[in-house]
Image (cartoon, rainbow, N blue to C red; front, side):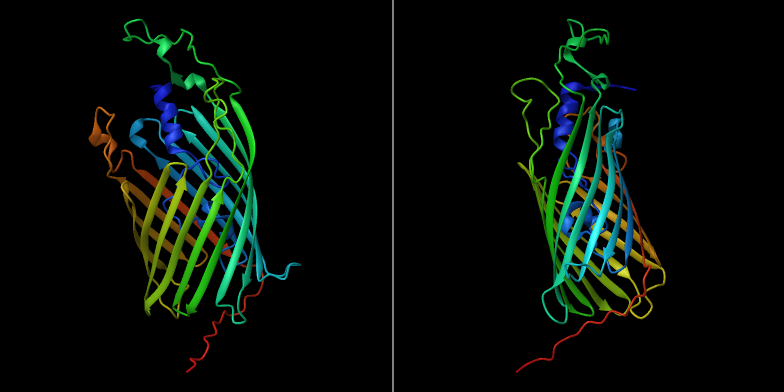
Amino acid sequence: MQKMSYRKAIMVICGLGISVFSMAQDFTFSQYSQIRQASNPGRIGSFNEDVRATLGYRNQWYATGSPYNVFSLSAELNVFKNPLKLDKMGFMIGAVQDQMGNRAFKTNYFSFGFSGYKALDAIKRHQISFGILGAMQQRELNPGAFTYNNQFNENGRFFDPSLASGESFGSKNQTHIQFSAGFGYSFQVNEDLQIQANGALLGINSLQESFSTLPDIEKANQKKRFSFGTEVSYRFSPKMVAEPFLYYNRQGPGFEWVGGSWLVFSEKDNPNNFILAPGFFYRVQDAIIPALRLQYQNWTGAISYDVTHTSVTDASDKKKLIGVGGFGALEFTLIYKGNFRKQAARKYAVPCRTF
């Protein structure tokens, strides 16, 4: 397998980042509404059923020959009877593995989080939530997967792996504990319209991110990440629901805007039938993201692809690295939701108009 330049790989690692659950660095799922609990602890338990299990996979930058692969798995439980007299409490355990395809850099996350939900009015149209997430982050660097300037001969034309790299590394394995917090607000306008707002501070305690022992970078810390977003669910016909969303993320100098909508074909009086939902999203100045979501009874699956349209300035074959099969990202999610207690029909009280 072709090795990646040390300097170039370090730039890629710093630029792409990693973020699920512990959010120490920042990789991003495009399907925000499918994995909202991954970017906001305040949305843990954001479903009506008792349990939810979520599986996610993302493959990015396939054309490099060493794509980034992200695997995520989480399980959530809603507890409606609790000593804090909240409407409900949500609990989550999760695990994530993020790695470069040539195993040069790998991070594992093991997390536990909880959230609380409380209505602000007697008829429960306004509801707020708050959540905290703690995660153990294990990072591993494999220096042998890189090439170094000192391993090329004097004229720079031939590579000799037996030569010393000349680079200085500290521990090649790191373990950290990190905490994040988030909130949510939901307004049930009527049976057909719901509006949500979400915000989170990810990585409250900054962690050392450098493997180097060089004085100028050995104390480098990961940047805190701020996330804010809004979602709407609007049934505009007996058979169709629009689910637009808009999210903003910032970590240090880097930021992103992602917006779009699902168009759900679902009959109002028979919601358990097979449900089809095409989607179209856009990451500003980066990618167009078509998506498709399928739901049947307790199961929901979705697939999306980030069609990158930004230019690649440092590549011998730019066409290969842009769009489908290039620097895009293929993403899958699979969700199961179920109940183990008797469910009462949910009703929304709409107050009478006053004059």
